[in-house]
Length: 155
Image (cartoon, rainbow, N blue to C red; front, side, top):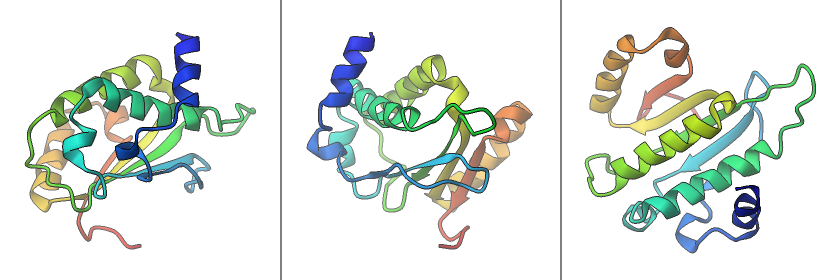
């Protein structure tokens, strides 16, 4: 598996996956920031193939993991920001399959790296529904997720 991962990291991302992710900077707790902007993507292409989508997200995660120093006292998790500005969340297709599969892969192989996940530019109706649903989640999980509607933040 390590050889496969090394090959994956040496292979440039396919064109539809390029230019949407920023892997630099730090949040207020010193965690590396990983920003993914889905609005500029051709979502029909990006979510068309579950395996390719998983390879893309694993590549981004591995790039970030390799930037960690693992020095005592330094953060060993990430602040992951998903910006959905301009994305229709009403679309079906493979989106759900892709999200379910990458969630499983990241949970199985990278659970210790999930510091906080910020999901921004969601339609207000989704934010209301999701925030209501989170009361059923364990407090630890809830503390790692933030859902923001369009205009719920500055900057």
